[in-house]
Length: 140
Image (cartoon, rainbow, N blue to C red):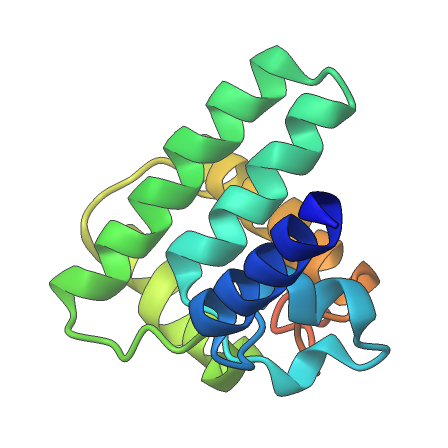
């Protein structure tokens, strides 16, 4: 009898705590089309870095985090909207590549950053976290 009462208390407590809402992670697990969930850049970066950790890419993880933080800093300097779903190849060309060239970065540095950005967007596209890959037509 006491066991049933405890289970009922837990169920009531659980219903009150949840309020019928799922977290982003729970939505990601049950959704076939993850592109309907709007993620921030920071959330997507953490998903990407977590995947790097799972694949045991420690050195690459540090490189990716550094390069992708520099990438986002470039966009913030230019006051570019940071909604990942709206980025296009033109955004990358004008606001990343041309901006880095204007700032005097060497071609090697630009290409290094572009490789990290490409890996990030390829990962997002492979996981259906974005509708289109802005790096698809960018060569480096």
